[in-house]
Structure formats: structure tokens, C-alpha cells
Length: 408
Ligand code: CTP
Image (cartoon, rainbow, N blue to C red; front, side, top):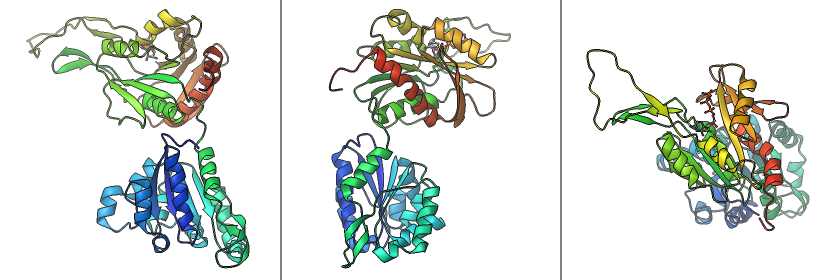
């Protein structure tokens, strides 16, 4: 089971099956993943937090009101870091509190803040499992998008025989791996450009634009999560490097072109999400310019076209990398994007209308159109969703153009 580049948040409930959660943690770590642990107070009575700390290599969140643990690893940080939440064992009490939306301990409070997929592994006595209150709570959680694995049937710890046994750790880990989604870019080399460029005028001034880099960073993160080796060539951005992505920081268009050039070897896919400045000042003054009494004229010259440069050399050749461009337009979005598609010999252009509400620079949610020679496809969602949808669309083109060598 492959968990590389994934963070699983394992929330442990207070039942006798809590000891089996240790094996779930171990399977995630064995699969190359990161596991983080939150425990209910009752869970700590069955298995010591130290055991989970040793297995996960990180502090265990047990007490929301302990200033030290909240400072070192708060529930919100834990919720943010997770790609998947697994609750194992999910006891009858824990199901009830999750369904009610309570936030009375480390597990329930973290669960309230979670936005990633969520998996429950219930475990309890058969008669409790069959109780309508438990069934209703489970139905409520399912209707809110929680997935469920198990329980299995068999001999229970209390001597009863029937349904209610925690699913086997390997089944829980398999369900987790399934929910984390495909690793369909394993063995692929992806280069992403992101952010603005800065073209200096003098040591303290530059020509730039308000790109935050969010779209490119989302594509890089999604490609890495799906197994690709990703180089992210980024202009100045406040965003942190996504997990398992090689971040190459640049400032100018020229540096960006040079950095991409150095990554061409074996590149399967180039996603050019950067808002590269098309012009730079013709002269870069070595000292800070002093203002004069009158107006000033700034002469600008063209910068290298990073995407266009790669396209003119490689596009159309057998086994050429797949090229994706971006187009920010204020009007005639699809028509202009199609021009770009042809001019830059791209396989797909992601067009968005800048200036429209909910689109363009910096907005968390975005509305884009995937433009190819076929019918344009419109899409709205978070940048992470758009990134995954883009990779979904590109995957068949990639597999047709650059078949994977056996074993990749
Ligand atoms: N691009 C690039 N290098 C440049 C300029 C743009 O790699 N010097 C890439 C962008 O990352 C994006 C696409 O090309 O993928 C944008 O195309 P472009 O025609 O440059 O967009 P605009 O500058 O918005 O075009 P125009 O001014 O023609 O509307």
C-alpha cells in the first residue's frame, strides 16, 4: 500500500480495539505516509499516547486544554495537514458526538475542522451496533460524506459473537488508500511554473503583477499527491512549498526560462501557470533612481516566453512533453484562449476571466474553462479541485503521447 506524500490523521476512540489502531498507524508509515494521531481521553486509558507517539514520530493530540500540546500541535493545524481522517475505533459514543457536531475533545474538535475525506471504522458490542440510536448516528454521518469500513462479524472481546468487530487493520488501510485517490502520475516528471515575475527597474523597484501563485502551487501539490516527481519554478510568492515538491525560486522571466530549461530532460508535462511579465525595463539601474522635477518614461523590452520557448523547440516532435498554458482574459475568453492554444502549441489552455467575481488572481474559488480544439469545458471550484480536474483531463493525452515504460 502506497501512502507516500500523504498525511493520514488517525483519530483513536476509547474501545478495546484501540490497540489495533497501532497497526493501522504502522501500515501508513510502512507505505511511506505520514501519520498524525488524535486520541479521546477514553482512548488513552486503553493505549498510552506514548505508543502512538513512537509509531508516528510526532506528538499525539490528547488534550485541547493543555497549553503545551495546543501550542506544539493544535487541532486546527492537525486538521489542515490531513489528507484523510480515519476514526478507528469509532465507538458508539464517538459516533454520537460526531453526528451531533460536538467539539468536546481532541478528536471531535479536530473532526469539526476537517475538510478532507473522512473514514469511520466502527467497533462496539453487537447489541450496541444494532441499536437504532447508533444506526441513526451512522446514517447521519454517511449523509454528510463520511465513508465507513466494517465492522466485521466474529467473536467480540466481551465474549459475544456477532457484528461489531473493528475491521482488520489491513482493510482499514486499504480503504484509506482508496479514499486518498489514484497515484496515476507515478513515474511522471512534471514541471509547473507559478507566481508572478519581478522585472527590476532599480534595486528597490520592479515591474510585476498581483499573481499569488495559488493556482500553480495547487497543480504542483495535486501532481505530487498523484505520484509525479514535481519541480515547481516559482516567482515570488508567500505560499509554502507543497509537500514533496521541489521548489525552485526565481525572480525574473529570464531566470524562470533558465530554470525551466534546466528541467526539460525527461519532462512529461509542463504546466505554465505563472503570470510572467511580458516586458522588462530596458535598463536596470544599479542605484536607486532619484525623482526629478518632471515626468519619466520607462522603456520596456520583451522578456523570453517561457512556455512559447519550450513549445517552439519541442511541440510536434514525437514524444514531446504535454504542454498546458494559462490565459487570463477580460473578454472573448474562449476565442483568445484558442489563439493562445495555437500560438503556443499547447495541448490545453486553462482560461479564466479576470475581473469577474470569483475568478482570477488570488481568489480561493475559481471559475475556468478548459480550452482545446474540442468543445470548451467550464468548471468552478477550489483551486485544488481545478488542479485535479486539469490533471484528469491531461492524463489520457500524456499516456497516448508518452506511453509509460514498463514498470513505471
Ligand atoms: N507565458 C510564459 N512566458 C511569458 C509569458 C507568458 O511562459 N513570457 C505563459 C504563461 O505562463 C501562460 C501563457 O504563457 O501559460 C500566457 O500566454 P500569454 O499570451 O503570454 O498571456 P498574456 O500575457 O495574458 O497574453 P496577451 O497579452 O497576449 O493577452
